[in-house]
Image (tube, rainbow, N blue to C red):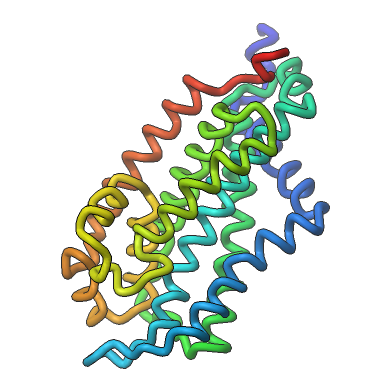
Length: 271
């Protein structure tokens, strides 16, 4: 038996790496508090400021914000946090040390995605708890709605995590990674209808641009889960477009993986 045959598979290594990533994340209390509190604070502010009730639905603007912020929290945890985290791993030499182990790049990606899955699930639960406590958000009772939640959640985490890892390649340091990732993240929140609802009030051109990126479809997917079907008419297409949501997010999963494999590097270029 060869040495290569005795080594664990990339998936096994990725799962083990994921466990280490989770432990490392939750030991950094400041990062945990900021990651979980940011979407909750934004939700509390927006939900308290806007009191609009949508006609013929009984749905309030704060309930729409809650559904959208579930998605926005996932994007922040995956895209923004991972771009900074990977850049920091490269800057402090963590990746250089890992390169000398059996851990492959794919295993490293899997470990990061596992971290985001766990953190995003906890964050989504916190956002929904605040929405239920402050804004009378109702959890869905349909199994089909929960199935939609699962596949939107998984595709959102994978696609945005891979894009976050790929974006880290553009940064020379963790500090610059924060700027590189936050600019598109904040901009897309507005043009994707996360901070402005209904999204149909935005200029068509803005929404068209947003439609090429995951944020719009993540928010729309979660609105389809936590809002009644009568709210679909306030989307740009007048429907939830779940088939297109799955197609776009699935395409970004593939594109994100390709970008990661092409751009990923174990050390800074200057090294």
